[in-house]
Length: 532
Ligand code: ADP
Image (tube, rainbow, N blue to C red; front, side, top):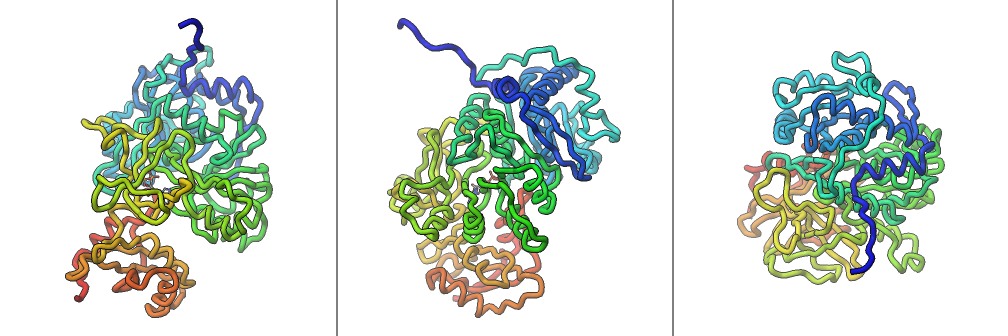
């Protein structure tokens, strides 16, 4: 063969090199919990990351070693992402909201050697230290703690070094799923998968970044790689606005003061922001693009954003998919749709970017691949270059056949490829041989003005196999009688879907990532009896 193209390794340090070179003076802002602010630039991020690389080498950290962080969103945390991978390490972002048993398991399983953490998590460190024997070095992002301060630690280095050479198929990051069943599982991202994901994520249908974008990532850097934002943002040199606290008032203030144009966060975050605006007044300033996922966006939320002229990218994904799988991008007939139809379109989970493939299998017979008819729901599978192949240290691949990964989600795929999630495989309720979506029942229930939260689970039934019951938390001070709730449900779901019983509780159990824990709920109602 005469000719060819250059070797240019898809390693993520290339991203920060590019950001420093092409967007070097572009600012990054952190607002700390006490209201004070720090500012740096992309050139500054790279320089500090190089210093951290030197400091890690001085600690004896070698290629492939795991470096953990347990921290909120701030520029020092971002520097550590590039510093850890720059030293050839594998960055392990720990979710501080997980339970002690999970924290012990994950750190031990990852064999983390260094932990960088925020002072607010000092109580966790004090509590867990003796259960984390692999950690040799603790570095605190804040000054005044008992351990080495991050700035002092990297301040002793001059940054005159090169990144550790890595192959694009080397690992660079480790994220654990929250493990609603069994122990958390580690997903090991590679430089190449991370780079391809980042290049995809900047597209208009996803993050919609260009050099003018000002991005407020509310999604924590410890959750699902912060949806890949720290990598993707550097590609186009966005101005990042970090908030070390997720307080709605602080977020609204930052949106106004820093000219935020883009923001990313789970639906609960935006509910808080709307409540803040409703009670304290104000508006969303220059905000024009929201990326939201992790759980389904309520229709009313999408409508409110759209009425404010804000584009909504409703995304579906999971830790195992790096995490972007689909986004609610505009379909080709968008301009012909009415406003309500546009809101309906955005309420679905959207379509795949190039690089992700989807299919649904029959729930009863996995040999049957379902048609994309917009009606038949089945077990959702996914594959692509940024989808997990094998969990960290697992003995077998996580995929089934032909590299398909079973997501555990139940979905319908529409003829134009739009994904509509209907449930989780374990949560869907089988009644008389037909499937009832617990998620749709829950969505119908929260349409009742007195309902704060609702969860539907299947209970064994002598005749129907399973029947749904609805567990409900009322809004403070609200009166909800079961009959009025049943009436609301009946306008939204089929009659045979109506729950056999409605139970009012003070609280519904949640997982470490804030999702309803159906497993705990099923345990709680294990001995519940339904009559024939
Ligand atoms: P964890 O598994 O650690 O709780 P993930 O973020 O990996 O956290 O969770 C992925 C799951 O979240 C998906 O499999 C799906 O069930 C749910 N999910 C993600 N995005 C959406 C969405 N837009 N709508 C509904 N469910 C979603």
